[in-house]
Structure formats: C-alpha cells, structure tokens
Length: 338
Image (cartoon, rainbow, N blue to C red; front, top):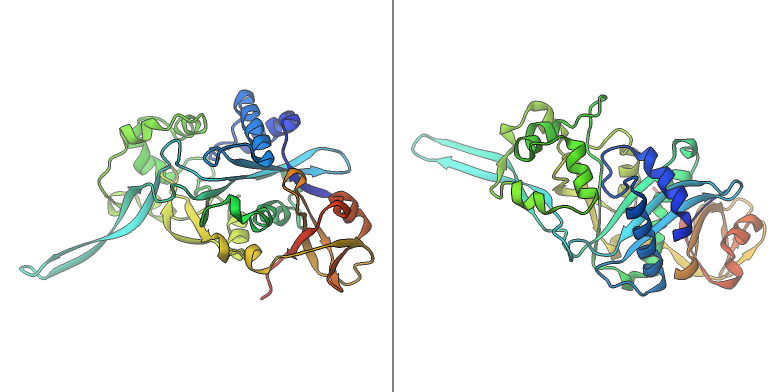
C-alpha cells in the first residue's frame, strides 16, 4: 500500500534519490543535499506551525508501506513571491489599427508579470516510474488538495500549479531556444539550475520588460505555448479534474501552462467530508481518498470506503495505515462524478 504522509528530515536520503531521477525542467526538486535538507527542515516547521507564512513549504512523500521505499514526492508552497520575485508570462492581445490604410490586426504578446505573488503553489510532484500504475498518481497529486481543504486558514485565496512545458524528444525546449536563450545567453538547464538554487535576480536583470510579440517566435515555439511535457500531461488532467484551469499564464522558461483556481472552488473544498472512521467491510464502496485530519501526522490513502450512519467505514489495513482511531478522517471520491 502507498501512503502519502508529511515529509521529515529523516526522509533526506529517499528524497535525494527521487531528485536524482527527476531530470531537468523541475526547478523545485534538484539533487542538492544541502538544499533538500534545508527544505525538509522548513517542511517540519511548517507542519509544526512554527514557520512564518512566507516560508511555509508543506512537503509530502509517498511511502511504500511494504518496503519502506519512498515512491514519490509533492508539495504546497504556502505563498510565493513574498521574499523574492516570482515571475510568469501572461499571454495577452495587442491591437494595431490604421483607418488610413484599412488595416486592423490583433497580435498575441507575452507580458512579464508578478500576478501569482502571494498565491499558494502546488509543486514538486514526482512519482517514480516503478509506481506509475493503478491509482498511485491520483493519490499523490490529489492528497495535497485534501490538506488544503482540511486547513484552508493556512492558505491564500488562490492556488496554482506551473506545469512542465513541452520539450522535444532530445530534451530541448523550443520556447526557450526561440526566446529565453537570446536574453540569458545560457542553455535551459543552466537557467533552470540557477532558479532551483534560489538565484532569480538574473531574471529581472536580463529579461526585457516590454511586451514580446509571439509572431517573432519560431513556429515550434508558438506551438509550444501552453503545452505540457509528455510526462506532465497526466498530471495536468488530474488537476483540471479538481477545478484548476489554464487562464493564459505561462512559465517564463519553457512556456508551460500555469493552472489556477480559487481555494473554495476546488473539488476537495466543495465535496470532501469530515467524519469519524471505523474499520469494517467496505463492500462495494467507491474508491476514496481518506486523510487523517491531523496536521502533525497528516496522511492519505486510496481505498474502497463507504459512509454508514455518519461514519466512514474503511478496510482494516487502511484504518491501520491512517491510525484513524486517533483523529477524524476527511474523505472524498477518488474520481469526480461525471
């Protein structure tokens, strides 16, 4: 059984192993022991309620309870852009018209912006290939939304997720090659590593502030705008099921889409239920995400479950994995109803 739980500093070796497997393009997970150790320390303080709002970083790991191996990682940044700038492109329209020659044109343009400042970010989602089957991906991604639904007071009005942008089979980013490389004079991985190490000042120093017409980009780069990496497309679909939507914001390096939603519009916020739990035969109960509603020992499993007389009935292994006798359980259907 996979269980998603709070990450702790004791998970450093397992998280480092996952970071080595991720590859380029995911700024928030880099195989840097010192940086990961510091992040896990901040995560522990976040779950303990001692981290300042600007520092909160709730990191979760998926653990294989049979072997103890860490199978995946995901996180929620409590608020971005409060201690350092957080950049995106916003895709907009510029209109040019001349009555003298009878020409009217609408041109797409990219605007450098800070619109996500203060918003919470869903980030660092990675599931090891050995575990990419069954409900594991849905469990890992959606577990974070149950945490937000249980503790909404910890989060701002809006939550977003930057999706890894399109890359060609050889790993190159058409968007970066057509745009970013001209201003940064470095390859994609170098710029990505600098951001991963917290060195983002170079973006403001080198990136032009005026709108950039997309018609000046290559055909490949324009086609990549708002498109996801092949490995990220399933993660995008899962978040869209939960209420997040692409609204024209992009990652400035690879042109990947930014999905966003109001916290109170998330399916987990609308549909999840908090109830006591007991062990029993779930029968034909639907696949359910069940979370122990305790911030210090938050944990989530995917399991058949059913509601009986106001109690959530869970199979004994799920009940034991959650240690649900000690806390109520927040639950919702694994998949949204059609």
